[in-house]
Amino acid sequence: MGMKGKSIMFVGDSLGRNQWESLICMIYNEVPQTQTQLVRGVPLSTFRFLDYGVTLSFYKAPFLVDVDVVQGKRVLKLEEIDVNGDAWKNVDILSFNSGHWWTHEGSLQGWDYIELGGKYYQDMDRLAAMERGLKTWANWVDSKVDKSRTKVFFLGISPSHINPNEWTSGVTTASSKNCYGETGPISSTGTAYPGVFPEQMKVIDMVIREMNYPVYLLDITMLSAFRKDAHPSVYSGDLSPQQRANPIYSDCSHWCLPGLPDTWNELFYTTLFY
Image (cartoon, rainbow, N blue to C red):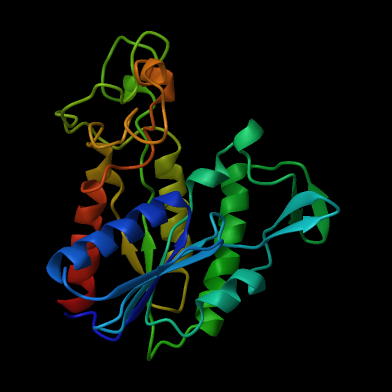
C-alpha cells in the first residue's frame, strides 16, 4: 500500500467528507481483512487502518477560517484561522475544500455576523468574503506547513444539479425535477458549467497561484458537472415513501458512493504516487 504509514486529512465541508468516505471504502476494498478503527467526533473524525499505520481524518471547517460563538451569535472571522489550524499540523497529506457554504442564505447560512478588520457585518459580497477567507488560509499554509513533509491539495468546486435549465432547454425548476429521476450524464459538451461555481473557481485559482507553497489544485468541477445522474437524490436520509416521491426532497449536491468521488480519489492517488 503506497499510503503505508501516512496520515491524510480532509478539511472542509460535506463534499470533503464525501471524498474522505470514498477513500476509506476504496482502501478497505483492497485490504478487507485488516484491522480498523473509527472515531467519530465534531469537528474531527478519524478512520485508521491499524495494520498499515494509515490514518484518514475529516475535519469539518466549511469556511476553513474560524467561526466563533460570541454572546450566542456565530461570528465568521475572515482573518483568523488559528483554532482550526492547530488541528491540521503534523499531517503528511492535507486536502482542503470550501465553496458551497459561502453561498448559503436564510436558515442554511453559517454565520450571524462576519468580522473583518475589527468590524462586524451581517453580510457582504459573498465572493469577496470567500476570497478574504481563502487568503487567510493561504497565509496559514505558507507560514505553518512544512514543505519537506506535507503535501497540500485543494479540491475544486463540486457542482450541484438543482436547476435543470443547466442541461435542458425550455424548462424551469418549477416544472421539472432537478436531479430527481436522472439516469444518465449530460450528453452535450457545451462550454463552461453555469452558475456561481466558475466564479468561485476563479477565486480559488487566483489565491493558489499567489501562494509560495506548491498546492495541488484537484480540478474536478467540469468532469463532475456532467454527472447529473450521480447524486443520492431521494435515496439518502430517512425519508418517508411520500417524501421519496417528491423531487423537492432530492439531495442534488452530494454524491452516491460508490460513485463519482471515487474518480476524484483516483486522480488524487495518481497525483500523490505517480
